[in-house]
Image (cartoon, rainbow, N blue to C red; front, side, top):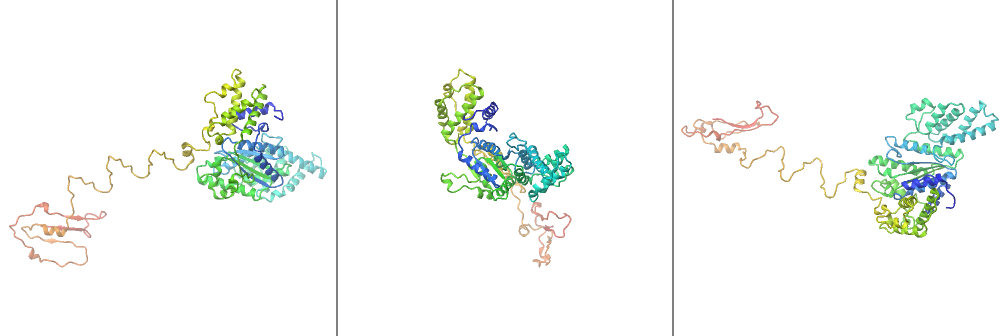
Length: 559
């Protein structure tokens, strides 16, 4: 290493990298490669410093170095006098949401607000005090007032309004300047209640406007729908406070891709589109926004950013870059695999950090490092799936074993059966069936199981299907069919007495009688018909009363 490393930085590097997370300090000691990507970000910093705005997506698979690159740019920006803030998205922190997920992201950003003198975060109050101290000194010199003079309070308040007059023309700018003036008055008069109320307002901690009005003379608060507008105000403010601009780093953008409800997902993409348009069209000043995510988060046309047409048309790749050429001016920066030479340099630096932290002499030379790389890179799929995270974690694990077990040799560990970087076995971007069941809005059916259709009866093959609202006819009983009245008249046997045919007809016209009543006289000695031969056929509507014969439709035969 070109520079020495202290134990605080070495401990943070070893502990973080062994656990598979990105350290926040000491990154310069192990950073390798990515020169083109770093230069693109440095160009963005220059644009922000000159009063412009920048927006970038960092695209790469899990463990490829997205978070590492963002942290490297973050640390470099603080050294260049930028104010930075960062947050990781999660199910509880999004760009917007009905449950306050947007304001939760804003609060996380403000908690991680950092400067060169406060790199660990929570730098809001120090920024305010630095700015107010400079205004107080400038005002005292101009007005020739003592530091303890009562007139100085009103003079500085007037100066605050003058300096922030440009902000008053923007949305919520007037309320922003009033809160800063309240902080100054609370600080000067030792009113901790007023000062704390101003800080709470700037951090977005007020739940409603009524609560804020009781503490401050404002009629608005920072909430889910307007938190980005306040970030634009804050970017102008930090510029006036003596910094070069505001940079916002948002990691784990894939959590927007994982939102199940399509409308909620599109609402977050619409918020992202608003930020993208503001920065790329020049509406925002002194602000840069950098978001990292996986290729699925950006390019998936079903759930990713490409499913939102307005974003897809803006983020589509340069057609000439698809031929293998590099284009770092695109809004999306793709992270490629580290080369073998870059991985070798990474292993060398890890040896130096590990030996410096545990104070021992490193005995691994180029032959051992080459053997380790050949073993790792020789596995199937390593050229496409191997990431710096797995290489770093496994190599530090090997160094830990060698340092704590002096009797073990490097050759024993490297040739041990089963030694490999396991992540090269499968693509971390490939979703399993369990992942699909969690992410998709519809249930995933296994290929060997039939699909069940809801709201339809399941008919078993051994049982006949029952049809409702129809009589079941048994095969041994004949079906009784209705007999037409005319056929009954022809087939009936004559009775011994006179047979009177009474026919009720519902029509308005009476039919002409076919036979006279006297002509229906038969021989009284004839045999009586069987009772079964006399059949009464009656058809009634279901909703009529049985005693009502007004519109009945039946034919009756009497002896």
